Figure (tube, rainbow, N blue to C red):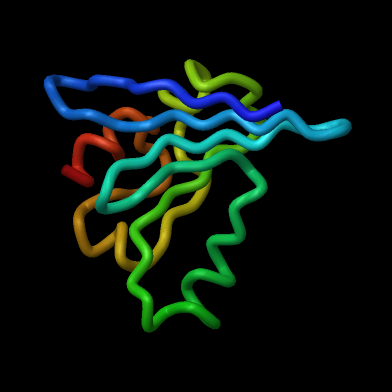
Length: 100
């Protein structure tokens, strides 16, 4: 099952998507500039093989809900995210607000 819902943080709109798969759930929250995602995100791949795309993204591990993704500290971020001041340890919500 796939579900999506709008999220507003400090007046800025984002889209939350949940994809329920056998034995796992994929979670993302995005806007037109970037996104945060659950542990399924391969930040290393984005930084190496897809570096020319300058993808703005962060990864949180161990999250099972969109609410947890917003509150959890990011485990890793892309190089492009680092350029904007997004870093590991920052909450998902803090990172999203830097993506506006």
